[in-house]
Amino acid sequence: GAGVSQSPRYKVAKRGQDVALRCDPISGHVSLFWYQQALGQGPEFLTYFQNEAQLDKSGLPSDRFFAERPEGSVSTLKIQRTQQEDSAVYLCASSFRARLTNNEQFFGPGTRLTVL
Amino acid sequence: DAKTTQPPSMDCAEGRAANLPCNHSTISGNEYVYWYRQIHSQGPQYIIHGLKNNETNEMASLIITEDRKSSTLILPHATLRDTAVYYCIVEGAQKLVFGQGTRLTINP
Image (cartoon, rainbow over all chains, first blue to last red; front, side):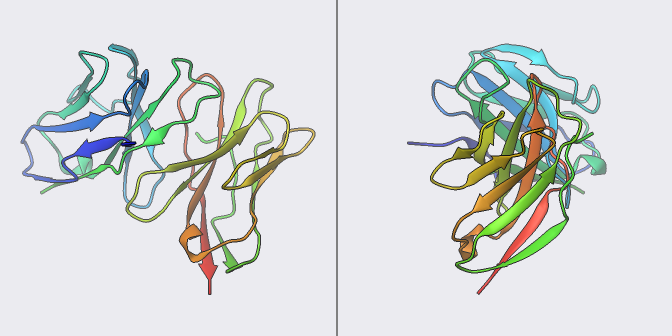
């Protein structure tokens, strides 16, 4: 069965450009998470969806970051007016259950964003 | 901030058991201990999790002390493909909070 997929795998943007990163979770998974991983660091939580509802966006670093999951499956993370500090790997994860505890997450391969 | 403390790096010989320690002295009663690993240039991979009892699956065993303040992940027969960064995470009703992890190197 297919795992979590993300596209594009690599993205180079000029400073100030808008970017959109896509995540296709495992079919039937209720929960979807976005994480940001800077070079040499562990992943850091950005936001969480339960179906189409964005229940936690406390990790989004600024109002330039926006995520959506309109039909409760595919999700898009959008970054407006990209800055060099946005350069990182953006990871998407999904899990089968709605509850956050006792619930393993399955990660995609990530999108490596480089802002020049 | 991560609620766990792990050694930054460890080495293990191929074919031997790799024992990765984790301290989580502030863990509360309803928080699970999770282990994930991240092989270079890949997304994190779930390994195992537990609450109180020891757990075993096809990948690894998880030993949690009786006071739940520490745990050990055991890879029983390490292979070169087990070289990765291993993250010990304490998680309650919140998102995963990753620390720096342990960089495990399996040597031939």
